[in-house]
Image 1 (tube, rainbow, N blue to C red):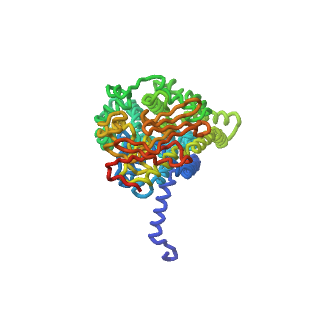
Image 2: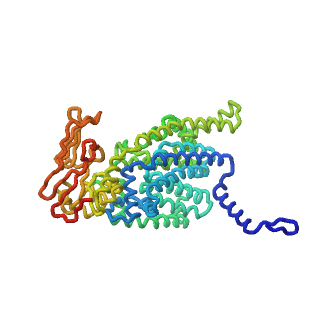
Length: 586
């Protein structure tokens, strides 16, 4: 410091440093303006700690099918593996690209798992800011608490699936839409909406099902003037341009994207009939509504039913005022968001199959509706018990926290139960990697997991169906039968054939299983082998596992298991081709 005429003057560099510190402080904490924000910041820290705990708990758990599908594509690209491309090109390509960057930089699967922690925590943050804009900070705060302890977000934070990232992008896009279009806070937010909504679609194609609420709100607000709004056209242009690469890849594998989306997802048209994908409105369309008690817990479902009347009652009473009243318009948008998501997902889903994670982007609004009666309860407490507002708010907070405890307990229970699922497949994939060459081919119905862990080209037994499913025209020449597989076998010369009596389904000529006399049996015709065991104890009653199966064109030699104590439901045979010079043993 310098002393000038009795005053101490700080060097310019110190002032600049302090200015930069203030900028950083404002960037991270400038949004904290009142007690609601302070409490939310504490909740956000708690949400991150919970999710980081889940990260540590699940860091090494085996991958499910869909997880391995995304990561095997990312691993192949990131590590430059010369193996078969098994990516399903109907899916958006963003997540495999991001995964590839993690593998390329050496962060790998662990880094991607931590990314899921950030996405999951981000949902809590975005939902708070969004609902604060749409309604008020009090309901936003309580909603953020519910999201922090939601079993769906907690459990799936430990799974590398696209539902949480897509939900984050969808809610972030809605936040930008609200700031840019509804609140008129700047065109940049409207354009960011187009960009982020495209990221949501590129992460998970089903995100397109939430386009109707946006369109409905815009048309309700502007009517025919919407066609003259240049800002909206620019936003649409940004959205479509970002989707161009995806639809080019899509068309290369499945033809006209619009026609394929119509037949595959909506079940409309001749192609849908040909592949038995046709769908109709039925009671199954409401399956996701029926699953709400399981999604949020029964006590909160009861509150949701009460809240639906309390929250949407004004819509019925003031229906003719909706276009003029912002609060009513906001509530109508919430209703459209939930209905679009749940009905369309129910329509494109199967009759009995419900995946709660598919509608995770609707959970913030479900919790918003469920906690709305607590606002009424708070007023009653203040009026009848003469409590100060802050004490009444504390009571409401404690009540909601208590109701959310079962969510946390269920999440922890699921994490424990599912932590080692597919561990046999993980072990098998690593075993095959250790005992094969990079150019070897493996046949396994656990296609993505074996591809990921073994880092070898992998095909399923129904190669013809796989060709249809993945748009791989080269595989369509093989018949959908045992003869077609044998033709594939002799042409591609895979080295290992793997089957499992526990995971996935198989053609009958490869593996069948069932029950006889109270015992379970596994019959593998292709290997001329069978096993009978007690389903309660796992004790093997009889085992006829051929060590060698000879054929005129090849010989199958049992590779795993080699010892009785190694029997775990997975069987691997090595294929020996008399005229195949490249085959070597490690």
